[in-house]
View 1 (cartoon, helix red, strand yellow):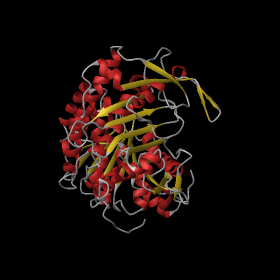
View 2 (cartoon, one colour):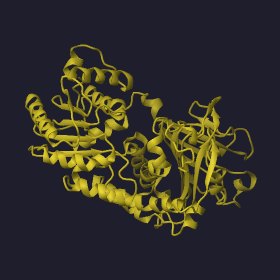
View 3 (tube, rainbow, N blue to C red):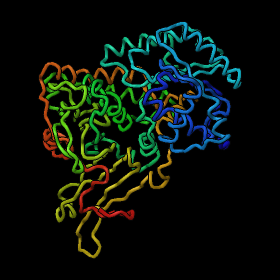
View 4 (cartoon, rainbow, N blue to C red):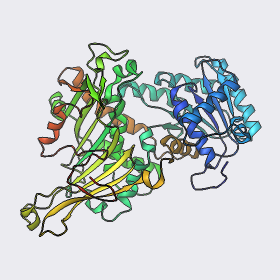
Length: 517
């Protein structure tokens, strides 16, 4: 293991108890994240991981699955040598029915044995990679089984979705709060672990030529796009009950809005940062009526289409989807943050499945110069753009206007780009690595607090209720397209347009980074 230390090292040894250890999330994300932390010296030398699931499995089988997980999904590859054996010996498997309290007593004994073996002082991180309806029961059984009686700290990581609406989220939160205090609960939104989302704070607050312009006097609109090329894959049964609004809007989309719109925190401390995000959510203009939802929100569902010459089925033809389903696979919305900084600035958000490219980007469009100034009279000036590329490309793209070389006052747009992925390479930390590391260190900055969750559900529930009442149309869009035409009209009626994303810039842009448009 790399023994180098840095500010992100875990200061204390810990036991990681992963419920749902045979599931897809553990295999694709959690085990690779733990191995990467180990390889980079960000994980204490003495640790323990207990994989927990209903399926019967021996330790040898579990460690063989662990190795396959690392080889397939981790940015570091492992060799079957002594170093791997030293790593793998920290992993144990426990077959457990989450409703069986006796099994939790056995889990406590196993955890205590490993803590003695590896000299771990009772610090326990419980990761529930489970269906949300099991969160409350497992939390209760952790207490009943004596797993919270150790002398160290206890922290609980839970995955989205946190409830189906505000009412169910409140019920779920009440169940968990019977066992864990709020400061012990880490509600994970992996988008908050992404490099460029976390970089928004530095971009804004560490640059004197951005923060003074970061307001309604200088910004015309902000666009957040989270597009996926995939359909529902094997998640048809779940997705048909959820839809794009609950699956992406309540968490990822609104979290990115809060990061863009928040005020500078008084201190760069977790609670101060989360306080500012909550203020943004409290300032969101609620849609007062179903008619306002109809005017400001567009929902769509993909029909048959094609992408890269591959024919794609309609959503209603996917496995486990109701053939008459009205579940949205796309939504776009115009959102307002009604405070002094942002009054009047529309935030346009869109997300959908079966779109042309996979990307997550934030576009900040600045107001143009007055039309009666010299350059604006002679040229059709394009607005300045700041684009924050979150995924899969990571970086910053800025579009400005400049004089065309050799001309007499002809203005052309040029683009300057910083490619985070290009500078560092693809071997960069995954979101789950950062977030697991943060939770183990007790840093809750990039986890969602209960009041954030509640306010987000309160906003989203108004939209969902209007749709349930049938007051908004469901528009169909061909798979492989950019969604329903109505989503483009949402901006056009305000004099704006969706800007190209994922490097699909317009042909007249000249690049100042070795890349040509």
